[in-house]
Length: 227
Image (cartoon, rainbow, N blue to C red; front, side, top):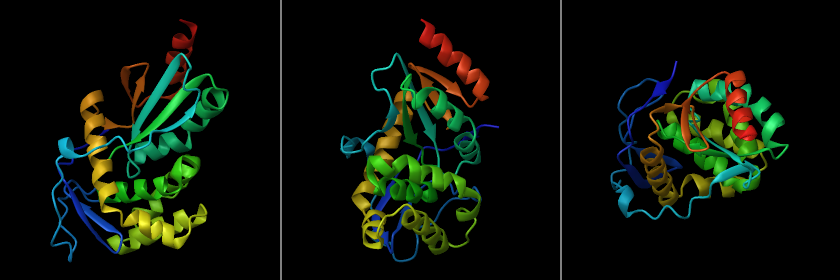
């Protein structure tokens, strides 16, 4: 079953102990989020007014390959976790690590928790991003159900520390309100450009595909490589 989502309209610029608040739907209970107490000065962000050129694409494989794949996924999406822990491993071994294709991962933000997870994953830079993302997906069933927002943030911190990120660095990443705004604006730009309405979604050489079995994806890739 595909997961669909509303477009996030705004992101708060205020960090409260590493808690960023933005409007949207909470992936854990599908209810409207309320601002965390203390974020009274939260500001709305217009994506059109945000410079998203500072957001780094997280890519692997061969950037010059004839086949390029972009995955759109949310760290709180169970289907995305299933893809990461199964088909993605095969895709990586068969095509990415062998430099047959180029692969780019782009985050989708259903909720604040997905944004926090993204900020932790990006805290290690391009070198550590994909490894941290894998840890986040591997532990998804635990950290998304940790309880209160503070507990979820702490579980994400643990993942960051496990990946070798120092506490001070993690806190700086989690409290970077400008980065949070920019990430959400970047996602909104990508959503509009590629007409993304569910996750995981894939753009293979410019054509959009929904989630699919690995065998089907392999057929598409092999056909594109043969052209």
